[in-house]
Amino acid sequence: MKNLKLETKKIFTYNDHSTKADRRNILSQLKEGLSGGIISDAGTPLISDPGYKLISELILSNVNIISLPGPTALITALTGSGLPTDKFQFLGFLPKKNKELVAALDECSDFSGTSIFYETPHRLMASLEIVDQIFGSKVHICVAKELTKLHENFFRGTPKEVLQIFSEKKDLIKGEFVLMIYFDNKDHDYSNADKVFQNLKSKFSIKEISILASDLTGINKNLLYKRFLSFSQKS
Image 1 (spheres, rainbow, N blue to C red):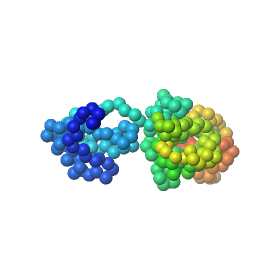
Image 2: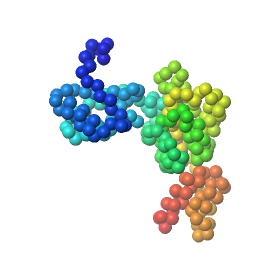
Image 3: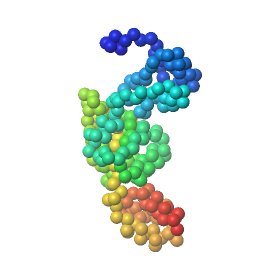
Image 4: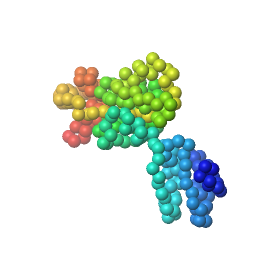
């Protein structure tokens, strides 16, 4: 702002701990005729960054919002990943708890495009191990590290292949990461799994059949469970 010779009048800190009173204070400044803007330490404001509640309230109060294009790690990562770019979903940071993490990853198996997550260095390895356990070699991943910085790098392959890279070079597990996952469901031949389900549906639970069919076909058990469950619901 000094370089642009702009005199700073007022700066308010807005973060996850900001309250409704903080938002009303900002709104009151704007109602008095002042102009304001949201800036972020890195990336684009509101993209895994505080601001949604503030912007929503300002819109309801008829404050004119102007969105400016800016840097964002998810698009930079996607375009350099080598994974499909025509259809993608951004899901923010991966959940911290294992149960929620598995549920989030499991949902990706139903999505026909690239799923994008942010991840921290101290949880990266554990998350990759869970991805490997759930998807195995059927999934294509890319981990983007320190984008636009000195140590920028892309690691592509199966979860096991990327895990091996980080296991051999622990010093790489530093900085900021974007994890991208692509699961091509069209690769699967479900014919044998469906036969297993039809033959055993009256004798075992869907969960048990999914595990057995997965062992026989190599298809992820979570994918099979959802498929068999849909059969049962239709019938």
